[in-house]
Amino acid sequence: MKRRQITDGSCFIVFDMEWNQAIPGKHYDIDVASLSGEIIEIGAVKYIYRDGRLHYEDVFSCDIRPHYYKKLHYHVKRVTGKTNADLQNGVYLESGYRAFREFCGKDAILAGWGTSDPDMLKKNLKIRRMNDQLGIDFVDIQPLFSAFTGDKGHQRSVEFAVDYYGIAKSETFHSATADARYTGEILCCILNNNDTEEVLDTISKAIVNPDVKRDYSFVSPVGQNGEAAVDYVNEFIVKCPRCGLPLKMIYEPFRIRKSIYALGECAEDGEFYARARIKKGKEGGIYTAALMRLASPMDIWMIKEKKCEFDEFGVNGKPVTRPEDDNKDMSDDDKNVNVNGKNE
Ligand SMILES: [Zn+2]
Image (cartoon, rainbow, N blue to C red; front, side, top):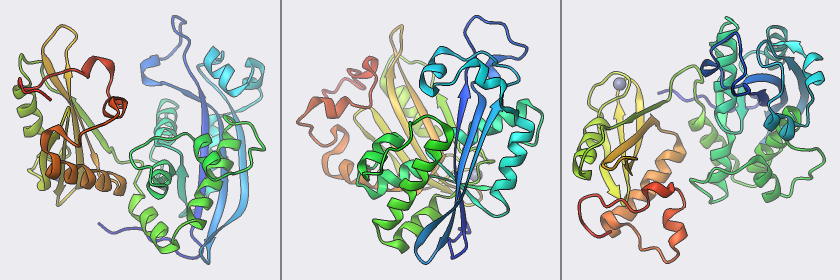
């Protein structure tokens, strides 16, 4: 696949949004399941890349007046500090989004912290019957931060990264514009604190098309033993989730404790990273929950590390001295699942 290169003049739009949620039990004119959040604010900063640096250009800030969720959920009220009256002062998404896209201009690279903002934007556009094809490249800064700070696999908050780089906290968090500014400064710090070519190359590889579905999840039937669940998942993750053809496996499925990993390539659709978890059903029995996604550079680093661990220590993984490390990403209900009668 051809990668987009970052060159002098490349434009980055670092953006962030705030959204309101439906209040449980309240009646709405839409199916709330189709809209997990309604946008109430869009904030963005523009940077131009030149001579190894990002140069600040401009800022965009827009309060959006919701069509559906007009009363603030108490949680959103608390986090954003907004009031119900504030919502009435915004402009509707139709004109706010138009202004935002004018601010972005042509050929910009959209950047954000996590992937929930582009996903939420698409959902909002769709429900308003606007064109939900963003038609703009997107890069998630969160895994870039983790990769360049030796913190791979962790999902850190914007505030964590701001503290990490000692960025001055002059604005409160959780306003879209402030968070966009902070995220932009984090991106600058990543670039300024590391080898320029390496950062640019990593960004290039991490750029995705936000209009393409990237995540495919599935759950196996609940079985009496773990082997059936593992067999089920092992058959599933060696096929392309888009076209169904067998993947050319870069890493055949391997298991460390309760996790199964694999990496394979479809000539048509790209590289897919798979991770499945072996879980215990609520009413007994064992099942697997799997996620496959178009592999990011971070996914590829992570699976390489896991494969090294597997080659050295096998299915039990690296012995852990601190039990909390072993279980940090497991939910309580699947800590003690014994897959096939072996002591783990
Ligand atoms: Zn395919």
